[in-house]
Amino acid sequence: MRKLVIGDIHSGLKALQQVLKNAAVTPNDHLIFLGDYVDGWSEAVATINYLIDLKTTHNCTFIRGNHDELCADWLKTGNQNATWVLHGGQATMDSYASLDPNTKEQHIQFFDGLENYYLDDENRLFLHAGFTNLKGVDFEYFEKLFYWDRTLWELALSVDPNLSKEDKLYPKRLLQYKEVYIGHTPVTRIGETTPQNGANVYNIDTGAAFRGPLSVMDIRTKEVWQSNNVFTFYPNQKGRN
Image (cartoon, rainbow, N blue to C red; front, side):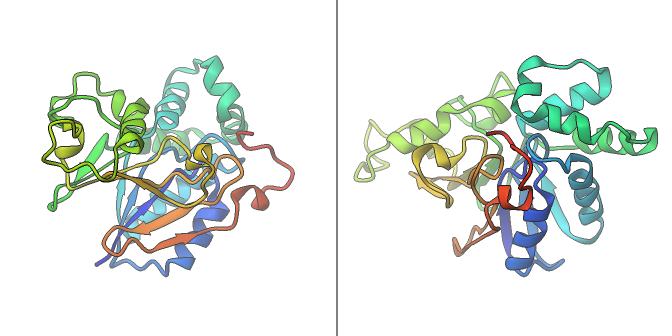
C-alpha cells in the first residue's frame, strides 16, 4: 500500500482528476489530503461531491484547511467573511448558489468530519499548516493553528542543513516527528512549483490556487506526480490571482 499525500486543491477538480490518474491511484493506496478543497476555481461543489464519492471506494484521510473552515462557517451561518470572499470565497459562493438543501447538508457533514491532523504509525505528521508548541500537536493550545500557522514552514526553511539534530540550537519543534507534511503556504512564494523540503518538513502546496500545478507525493519514495498548471483548465477564470 502506498501512502500518497495530496496538496491544496482549491476547487481545481479537473486537475485533481488528472493528477490522480497520473499517479495511477488504486483503492489499495492511502490518500491523505492536506486540506483547502475549496476557494479558488469554479468547481467547489463538484470537488466536494467528488471527494465524498471517492471516500466510498478509496482509503482517504481528509485534513482540515483554513479555507474549509471558512466555507463551512458560511454554509452554516450565511456569514460572509470579507477577507474570505476576496481570497477565493466568491467563486465558492457562486458554485453553491443553486445547491439543493440535502446536498448542502452532506457538504456540511463533510467539512465537520475533517481532521485537524493525522499521525501515522511511523510518527509522520500530516496537517494543513503547522503547530507552535515545542512538545507537539497534543500540547497545542490553539487548535486553529493547525490550519492557520505559517511559522512551522518558515522555521523549517531557516534550519541550516549542516546543523545536527543533537545541537542545542536545533529547533525542538522539529524533533517531535520523523517527518511533517503540510500545505497552506504555496511554494510558488519561493519561486518553486514542485514540493519542497526544509529540515524534516515537506510542503506539498505547489500553487494550484494561483498559477501552479496540483501535486501528489509518495511519502516513502518521495516520487511526485503533478497536474498541468491548474489555471489552464479554467482559462476564463482568475482563481486566486
